[in-house]
Amino acid sequence: MTDYAEFIRKYPTYDKTHDLDELRDRDYSRLDRQGQIYLDYTGAGLYAESQLRAHQQVLAENVFGNPHSSNPTSLAATRLIENTRASILRFFNADPAEYVVIFTQNASGALKLVGESYPFQPGDRYLLTFDNHNSVNGIREFAHAKGAEVTYIPVCLPDMRIDTDALEAGLEQAAEGENNLFAYPAQSNFSSVQHPLEWIDRAHARGWDVLLDAAAFAPSNPLDLGKYHADFVPLSFYKIFGYPSGVGALVARRTALKKLHRPWFAGGTITVASVQGDKYYLAEAPAAFEDGTLDYLNIPAVAIGLEHILSIGYGIIQERVHCLTGWALENLQGMKHSNGVPLVRIYGPLDTVKRGGAITVNFYDQEDKPFDIRLVEKAANQYNISLRTGCFCNPGAGEIALGISKPELSACFTRSGDDRLTYDDFRLCIDNKASGAVRVSVGLVSNFNDVQVLLKFARGLMD
Ligand SMILES: Cc1ncc(COP(=O)(O)O)c(C=O)c1O
Image (cartoon, rainbow, N blue to C red; front, side, top):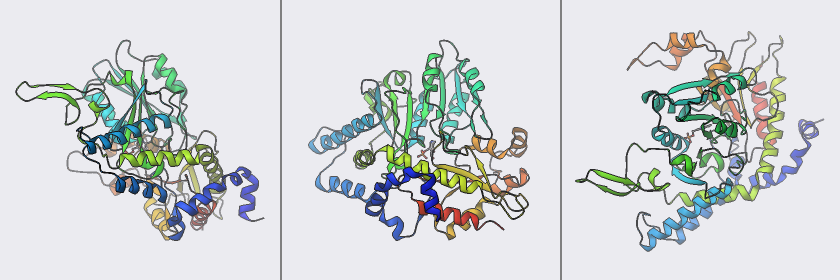
């Protein structure tokens, strides 16, 4: 039996996703023309060529001016911006009476807006999972600076899901009548674990505002804000449909936004500001949170990208991601050196239940020593594979996966100021343990061949 026949026997629903192969031929043909094995959909989605044409047409057929005005070209730009906000709300089934879309540069920009404006003060709480992107971790610096308490909830090995007892206990610690912010990712960018969206209601009931990081989840999964009423949802659009980069959003509940205090004002965020009067009045959201001139020429491309995803449908994307991830997981798990030492250690769920399409691993030699991830990336480059190495800006998940303890880290992090710890210093300090991992991730137009090339590459690392 060929590998493909075996794959279809195990994952018969893959056959129902052939529309995606036609889409790849039609709209992503550059991938196969160049022989690219793209396996970094968690890093960035890929755009369809038709998205570019549609965007170019909008720009070529219209005249757009700076939207901070009410002349005809300005109004034309404003119309497209407002239409795009409405498209985003519809896409996430968010009621415009409940939610607002604030444009940012990316998900990190959206997170910084929340961090710098959340009214932390002594006695307040910032609760977050170990499994978080650094742009969510970074909010703790605002919390620390304002005297709020920061608490991390650990993830458990081997599948890297959250310790639910610790979570329940953490949620019980909301300070009554104070500001309590709970932050977690809908999908981990490290292990691809999909954390339960049901936590949002549970946290609300105990007095928490909820920040749901949807950056890694939204590319392959529908997020229904009509059902799961998270307060703050950061997004980067290039992760969902590849183009444009440089535009993200904070989708936020109006009630939660009222709590936020911006630390400054800027062009576009005020109704009135005075120099001699030393006073300013912030505009209503979303304008109050959008500093300066929006990326008004690229924002229309967001509406085009959303339309592209809607025309495909999340069902077929999820099915394909499920089949390819399952096949890759089971094949990688089966690879062993001739002396029986497993080649691959997978960090996260070993099956496809409540997980996304990223697989994070380390490769081990016959002596059970991890291959240097930089060498793995170099070797993958020979196959034209685009994968990701490091900790993917998620140090909490990385430390737990790789078994790097707090005392070890404290011993390494003694330098300060300009005496920077280099990657090689760090590796040496943790006694040549794996200091990072290798992530491959499938998405919208991944196909069987992409995964087969990955598996061939992995077999090439065996003795
Ligand atoms: C889960 C998660 N959150 C936030 C971010 C930050 O996104 P950006 O770099 O586009 O700001 C990323 C990016 O990888 C991510 O995966």
